[in-house]
Image (cartoon, rainbow, N blue to C red):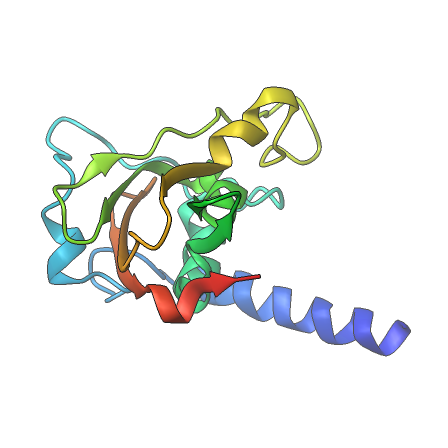
Length: 171
């Protein structure tokens, strides 16, 4: 148990050091893609302070995690005669985001509505009460072939990924 804790601590410290080194800044790639670069109008916006909080509420903290876990940004589940698209992973790191957009099967991008951050709690990214109903969208059974997700981090950089059904289908 202690060994696992030490390994996790080392990983988090290394990640925080990497985050402070400029990950996600305009000069660093940070997973920006042609897809995500034009998804958001950032004119008039200013980047948020990137001082790590230890609560994973800044791009410096969540950017590296999102970059490493892009394959988990969405999931598809066949349930009750429908395809459910889950956004739980994105919601878990939403406090370091200014916004997110998604596209199903190459359709035009649309805003992904997310709950607010709960800064008064120790875990501001928690999903409370009825917010759990926001974590998935319903679609016709078998209709989801691909899901594109673009995120705008609070340092005004973007990350984007397109995921295929066969790679995100869960039981």
